[in-house]
Image (cartoon, rainbow, N blue to C red; front, top):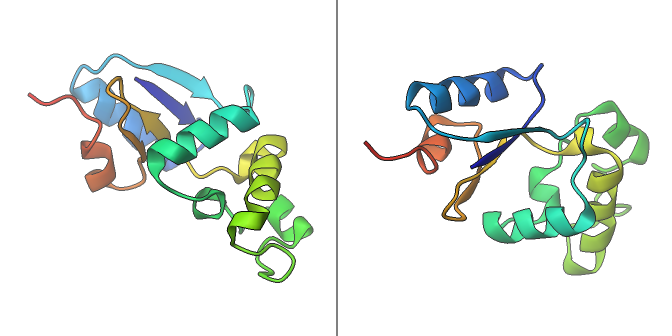
Length: 123
């Protein structure tokens, strides 16, 4: 299992605590220090069954600077998908967290207890 975290994020710390509580084996990826590539983002989005705008933190300062909330400048449609993914790769702070990929391929944005439960080992 791999978890993409920002150690300053409370949701990431909760996810780590939950993984530790059940004795899960996992690898931590500090994605701000080791940003995912475009190919890795595409793979994670495929496993999440989400689009890049679904995992973009549009309230981050860089998102504001880029004007990402402007749906005319940043349309949420297939033709703009590559641009969104490139922005996430270039500015990993924009990526929602934590993203957890279980060994069976199940992948979640673990911000809620329900999502986190999907990747926790069953007792």
